[in-house]
Length: 278
Image 1 (tube, one colour):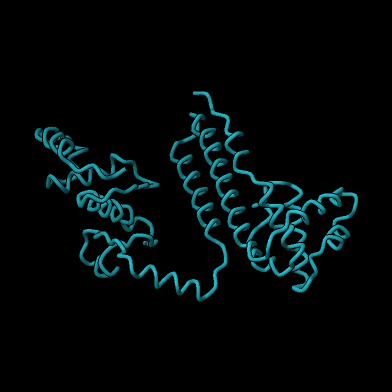
Image 2 (cartoon, helix red, strand yellow):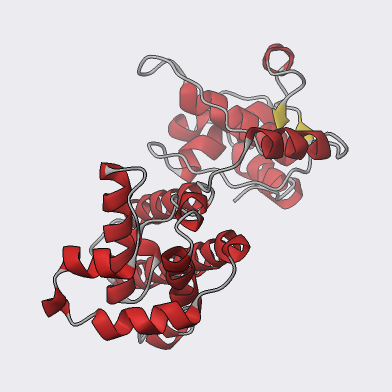
């Protein structure tokens, strides 16, 4: 399979005008920087914009009252960088200070989308390498996506804005899915709530994977679509235990093969089991 060229997709997620508008706005109204200080230089696509924003950030880190004026920044960068004329363009692109946050959100959004394209590009390369274990490739992709998600939600919010968002969220019902284990449901307030992260910690070989497999099976039986990624056991090893539970036999039978009725019972299970788990 020929790997598609994602350069065009990546180039479509660039807006030099928005980047210039934000930097120009900061140059003409230094207070605007405080509203967008959560951005990083990597959010900018143009190398010159990366350099200028990182310089602004460094100056404010050294002195919170530092004047982010073009002559000061040029002096710090050195006139040999050739950015003197570029600052004239930035000044002409400036907008009202109130627009700074909107510019920043658009810049972060485009940066996040470019990062997603990069993950897809990398995933295609790794998938094409048949010598590389697929579970390693999957784990790498999941980790990269989690990092992008965490970074895209890192913008600063005021206390009042957070409280208002909480109040608004309370008007919507929060889906809750039973784990199928009464004691665990009682400990979690009813089950697994949508949008929440749950962690189960225990020593090695204490049964964490069996517990997760049981919860996954219960969710499947309850008609809850979900993805289950065990990092140690294989799909067959986990499902054999679920099958044994449903047909009321011992999972050891899959090794001993001394039950003549087992193949037929498993075929019947496979034909009728709900299919809500990947």
